[in-house]
Image (cartoon, rainbow, N blue to C red; front, side, top):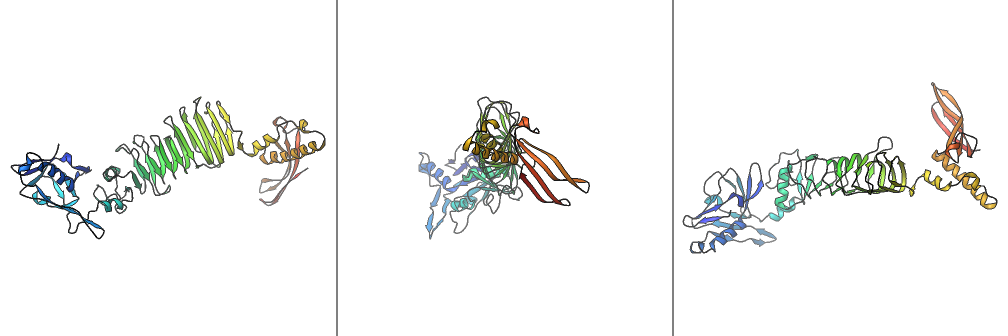
Length: 456
């Protein structure tokens, strides 16, 4: 449909479909007066319209002292304007005008917006949004008429927020407080920016369309649609993760998905005092890369023979669950790996921790290190160093000859002997002993005063 003019009667007909929908309920549409006058000029230039009087007068925008004053559009020569009938409102923008004076009466109402000295304010309005639509479900503001959706009047629902963003050309939502995203709209390629991971929780329903979305400064939970970016967030109980997760705190259960790569960059997780958060590798088809990881995490559910899961640890602790039974796993850096995997190729040779250091140093039997001369002396020194490391890391260590003092029906250790061994099979025996230590402990009631360990 298009605007038409009944030239003999002078009625200008405007179909509803030609007006921009800016609010669904109650229905509000928008007419740009400059666009409207250009449609009239095209009709005036037609073969039929050339013989009739002009439909309107037009005074263009005028710039004065840094301000641009609005144009004027005046319907003249007896023409009237009839908007397609219906229960909706039309918001008039872009010019001062006289539509209210020449409108054919029906159910349609107008928001005129005329003002003496009206400034052409499209750019001013745009800048007042600060680059996106502000949303707070706890406010009283709905609809899409300016200034709703600005920090001054945050809109209270995502349907109106999306419409404001589409009309204004924004791709970001600033979320105040908590919000749930559902299937009421398509949020593809939009960004959601919270106040902080403590102040804003964004819950994503499984049926929400959030493909290629970005999330910042919030706690994020629910189900994504893949190829996402999450930064400076706390993520917990989050499904279908692929894309990039940067500078985030990991908690709960996190599941990979989409048959794509998931990159966790400079993230933190868990506590050694409780159960670690888990990363579910999604069975097969997904690739995990964790760079510069800190904290405690468990990897589960890996079955793809050709899939990879790699990590570099800054100060990390990774547990490989027994449900990891295929694929290629490489972990490097400083930390600890507990490997309960039941298949696949696991490479942790370049993980630095006390156990691995001892293994690399003590790589032969005791007899093989007892050589003559200065080399033998150096190896004996190395043996003593190894014993200290083994004792400190509590590997191949046996403690006995314990004595105690009793305080309030509890036993408190006062002395013991510790022996370290070259191999697990010898622990507790008198053979292959690396070193023997004496332990002395002093107490004041139940408060430890001193703890002394000396090599015998």
